[in-house]
Length: 185
Image (tube, rainbow, N blue to C red):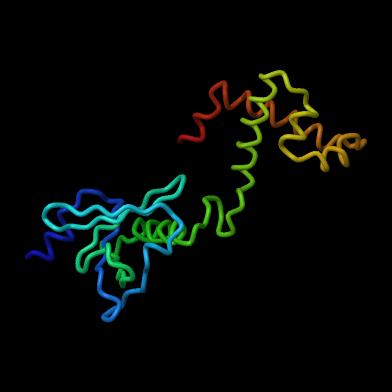
């Protein structure tokens, strides 16, 4: 009965569950040392003994509800529980996000690179901010692509870099004028 309460009383769907064991008795767990992690981490212990481990980076927070040995004693074995079978897709996304935060992988791909769409949005908003501040297209190009790229490509007859910067400013204007709503759908 107590184990059932442990797994079912949480109302948060975005909480992973785990058992914590001592390193000498790891069970199926992986050995973890919070002191070795570079992500931000917080351990919360409630009056009734529940432990919550929060792992976070600049964009994500992963919460683990933990039972067992004390999380504050490094290192320990962390045995993750994948509940909710067979509808586990949400849990798998959380597990991947946790692994990414744990390994310090940035959002936008396994190698930390920006996606093409994310880069376009970033460039559009940066270009709009700079154009609104009175910067020339060339100055915007230098800020987005670097002095060397501008020196090399700015006077190209095909105007690729110039057109790219102009398109970024126009995309920024569209986003500012309501186009950002499509990103929220």
